[in-house]
Amino acid sequence: MNLDRRQLIKTAGSIALITGLSRSPLFAAPLGANPFMLGVAAGDPWPDGFVIWTRLAPRPLDEHGGMPAVRVPVLWEVAEDEGFSRVVRKGEAVALPELAHSVHVEVEGLQPHRPYWYRFTVAGSDISPVGMARTAPARDAMVQQLRIGVAGCQHYEMGYYDAWRHLAAEPDLDLVFHYGDYIYEGAATPLGPRPNKWTPVRQHVGGEIYSIDDYRRRYAQYKSDPNLQAAHAACAFAVSFDDHEIDNNWASDFDQDGTSPEIFALRRYAALQAWYEHMPVRKAQFPTNGGLTAYRRLDYGRLMRMHVLDTRSYRADQPCGDDFRKNPCPPEAHVGPSVLGGAQESWLDQGLGGAGTTWNLLAQQIIVMPVDFREPGATEAQFATDLWDGYRPARQRLIESIRRHDLSNVVIATGDHHRHLVGSVPENDEDTDGPKVAVEFQAASISSEGNGKGEAGLDHMMRNNPHFDLYTDRRGYQLFNISPERWKTDVKVMDQIETPGGQISTLASFFVTPDAPILHRG
Ligand code: FE
Ligand code: CA
Image 1: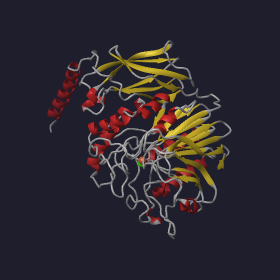
Image 2 (image 1 turned 30 degrees about the vertical axis):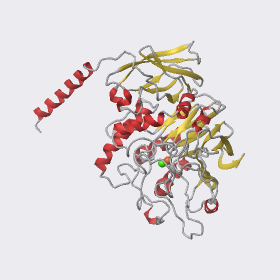
Image 3 (image 1 turned 60 degrees about the vertical axis):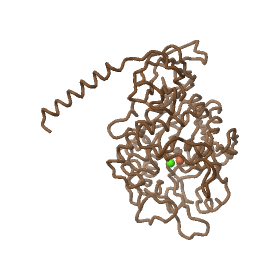
Image 4 (image 1 turned 90 degrees about the vertical axis):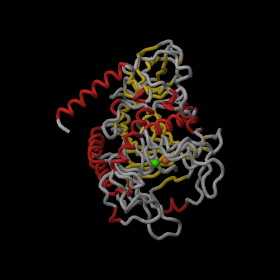
């Protein structure tokens, strides 16, 4: 292609963009149906604000959520009271068809560490549900108490979301960390009992999802759930993604099916754009050419610095294949160089070094501590290659970073594995009973894998992993109660999730003090 022709195409492109805009007038008529069927959300608080989010979708499962292909002005308000008698900030945003009519507003000018209420209005007639969110404390504030919920892995077909309803009702929540698997990408599972397989309790629509409209429709269906909407309306979230937002156990340019990286990249880009469109995240997480930057920090005064990590986008492909328990990966294969990638790894190292906070929270996805999955009676250890265990040199560098900064206050939040697991990260992989470098709280799934088996048949996991304090196959979430003196984690479990109305209870609590990464029951 010669230069003149390229110039011509560029010019034509920009003309098309301008006329495209002029042909897409602002649409102020009522939409004929409630456009707020996906609820509202807030996220990523900072001391004078947070993100507020909604997406206009009057018929969530229809093409384009039932929206006409026009730009729609959306008014937003933030108030100091639930009745909106003291509105302190308001403005107008435009919902664009390019972004599935999602709206992201970075609200500013609020007071630190206090609750606010927010809502949206379209065409003067349709008013959204009201959401609540707390701003973060001022950067130099001595914070006495923070409460953070941790949850994720919400397979729509495997259970009801009552755990979200219970989390929404927890008092004084500052934040929810969602570790990912917000959606699952697989095809709808046939309803009814299936021999030797799990039985779906409800069905998500369509085949396996590949296109951006597929991903949008999947998010729309999951976000139609009233319990999930209640959780978002109750508290700001800090969201990350794991594998199923795109494809099971993907790693940077590689999916699990051997698709060529150029083709998988198109799917990943579509999926990440849809993720952005449905999550209450900042402009810093806006999709750019080929992906988006999900790793970021949230500071809560002098009490806690939260490092939200992305353990999927930059990692090396799983060593000796993506295997789980079937065949042990020989030690010499554990040379996959990176989980975080070079840039994120040095960003984390700098952030750990400069924190100066009482606590450091690594909010991430996959299990950091070594896990020996060997079956009862097996003589050889078995490790899962999709976890940090598959990237041992990278884990060693993380441990060295924590030690180099002389930190005894590192707490790791983890998801992915669908079980509650409480334990600590040993300094030395081969000495799991030896000195520890951090504590790790892996929160069970909201619904993935159904009711689970409890502790039945899992004794060997505790026996073979002396650095475990708790391991159970139940659904639920965890609650972090953080103060300057101690960090207490409540392990919350559902009695059942396969019919609506399940109840929550506290299975166990653990605490740790900032001077030593040692877990105590309490
Ligand atoms: Fe999951
Ligand atoms: Ca996962």
